[in-house]
Length: 301
Picture 1 (cartoon, rainbow, N blue to C red):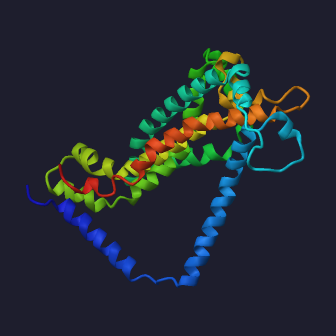
Picture 2 (cartoon, rainbow, N blue to C red; picture 1 turned 60 degrees about the vertical axis):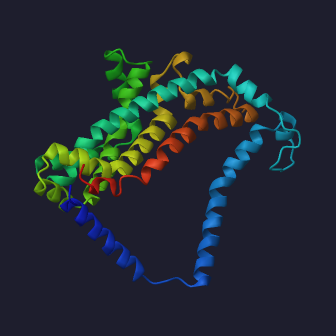
Picture 3 (tube, helix red, strand yellow; picture 1 turned 90 degrees about the vertical axis):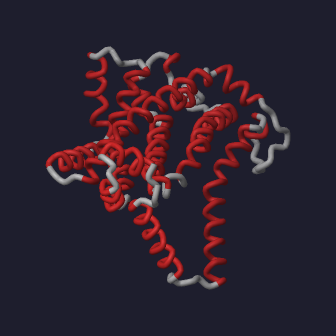
């Protein structure tokens, strides 16, 4: 089959971008050196708390309570990890957090795709209502809605349940996910869709073969945002969950603080380090998809 009009439109657009990039102002070696130094400083600023967390997780209680400041533990131990897993029910809480975060991510992503496309491509009352919903939902603090939300969920029998928490997280995360994803849709040139329709593709085929592959980085970013928001959320879980068997990770980690404000620093650091593993795995699985889709939708299947 001959090269499609959509392919030619995408190639032309890529050529123009390359020409603009070549005509850009080149930086001098001094500017590049300063840029690299600034980037290195920023990476150290971001990475040091994680390094200190890892160091604390492997330190003994005596070393943590001492005044010595050292990044490498003098006598590394895994007692903190044993205490975090056995005494605080961290594994069960991790399972609950994964169930809630994955379910929220799937629901929010599936609802965001058609909503974002309508908001980006069509003008009218529906788009105005959607934008108004997003803006209003971001104005009110969480503390103002948590009490009526609690009564609504209690009347529905969803208090102290993961299903109720999934519903709350989905509604809470959806507005910003819609707003973020519609920006990705708007960035896709409408000329590509018109070119596909000229080639004889109907609307459904155009969305499936042209728009969705190009939208993949936006879908991945939306999924990441939804997952992290649900996985790390604390306040709603604190109010809605009452049984220890339903605790999520943020609630389980808060139990490392005693009634008198005494913090089990070592087990808390170990628990926080273990709780970050699912997020790291999730990001590792999805980060490769961020770079795909840039040209895959330009070839007619």
